[in-house]
Image (cartoon, rainbow, N blue to C red):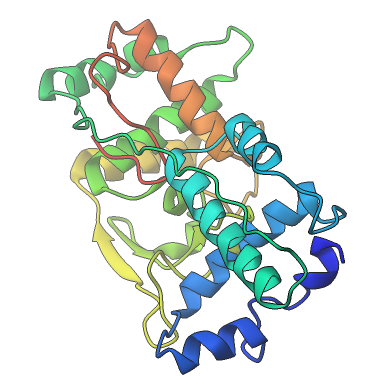
Amino acid sequence: ISFNQFCNGFYDSDSRFIRKQKSRLVEYQPQTIYQKKLYLNRFLDRFGNFRADCITASDIENWLVELDCSNSVRNNILGVINDIENELYSYHYITNVIHVKRFKRNTKSKGTLSLAEIKLLFPDDYYELINRWTILKTDREVDIYSFATMIYTIVSTGMRSCEIRALQWNQFIRDDAILINAMIDSNDERVNRLKKWTNDNKKWRLTILPDKTKAMIQKLRLLQNDNSEYVFTRNDAEISDYFLLSHLKCVLEKNGIDHIARNIIMKADLSF
């Protein structure tokens, strides 16, 4: 039997696996099931056509090492693989459960930007700001300003990367107030809920913008000449998580900020 065949509906509410967990009084939250399905799809994209009894620990480990993701995500994928392997074993499709050593998480304390560095990166003078945030000579000025404003909004409000990339103009309930009710999920889709959501609580919240953040966003609106629903764009398209993180690293390096040595982590929940 292939993994695609065995895992069809694996995490559905009426599946044998879920019914077994309920009998053990283990209840998964909707968000947990949602995430497990995403990790399962990622696994099946690579190994779905493999016979369940022909995969090795080395196959899985080598694949995980090459994935562009954090060790936390690798461990979450391993958790899904363990669910599958244990079920395969209980059905007698395999004689041994594959075990892959979990990846160590980065326990080093996160660094933060100092107030002086924030002032350096976000000067009041428009042209000085553009100069500090320009990486490619081919970049449009409006895109440079959009990216700088995007990062300043994260810094000043604590919004996550997945929330800021999903931000649309219709979420402004007034010039200085945003209803944060959407995010970009792990499947790169915009969904109207936030992290740690449940059926009863989608974790929406209201954020009040500081004066400078409000002013920068208002200026951005004047500079933009497109009809995009999204607040922050690049070349008239939404900004990807990969671009946000990699481009920000380039900006920090250009301005003499050693984010590597100080462990300034820029992940899905960017925080300085």
